[in-house]
Length: 438
Image (tube, rainbow, N blue to C red; front, side, top):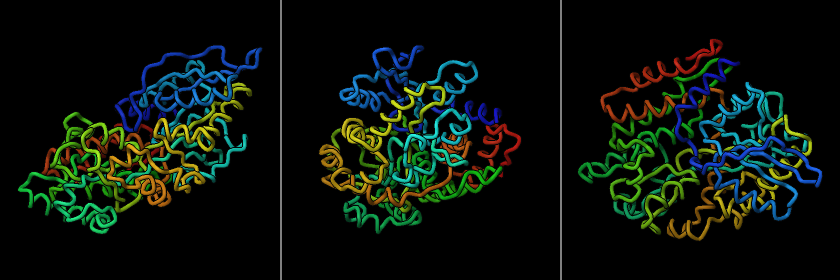
């Protein structure tokens, strides 16, 4: 087990960012004297990577719970698992509440540092199944509560959609683009019509990311890492789109790639709910009213994290932490998170409320008056693909990003060559001898 954890930590260090909300502001505060004080105060320490999420929630919660004091430590997403492992190795203090990214949830289970929330009354069945099942261990313990849901569709520029497809209506566009083959066919048509100036998508990495999260191929079966099957499922479609000139060669997340959101030569962008502010609105400030959102051929989730309570905390801290988490994900705190941070709870009762899932006036206006909240949370979320997590997901993601860019930079690279390159890389990252790589 140690080999597996250490290998994943090394892989994690290679990642700059994979999730919305990375880049939280620095805060080095921590507590060595946490617990219940003589005057009834309870101090809850917290590790997380997005201060834009936790600071508004702490402030709102303390209005009605002045006895609860929060001491957050901002930790970069890619450093969180490493920091927890180092704390275990050194015997130093873990926080009361810890944020755990869904991509690494199996590794958090392996660390075995979190309480089973069901002993406090948490009902995991009240949350969207595709996410809720991720936090359940083999013996049925629930180690975290999902803080948000991240359904994803395809965002598009309305003016270019009208020009090349004759409509900017999301339902009509979904009828046209109801399969990956349709994207390839239309991608070639657009490229030819524009004399090679216009691509459907700006980045092969962004497309591979979309296809990866939408894939129903499991990464792990028993002790076998199904690398070839998973990457073939993803990269075969990327190659098809590449060869149809549907995808441009920008490296995802770079300034040059981000500038394409405001240009007139790229039409579609894979769009989880967090990318509205994180990518689209921020990179196309003058584009309000010109964006739309449609469903992808496969509904999928992209991102998300859960909040866990560490076992070494005091009983008072654990109960106070649970009360806060319950408030944050299914009580009034869920509304605070929605309104002030853009995080939307996976609590089914809220998701089914058409008024509650409505997006902000700014977002609705930016998307041409479209009810994108309904699209995200009532059309996509209930039907999202669900694939079991594995302890090697992050390693595969690292390889996926690299191979996708190589495929775009070298248009002559075949699918077989790409799979072979990636397999060599994954064999270097997976150092657990008990894991077979297929």
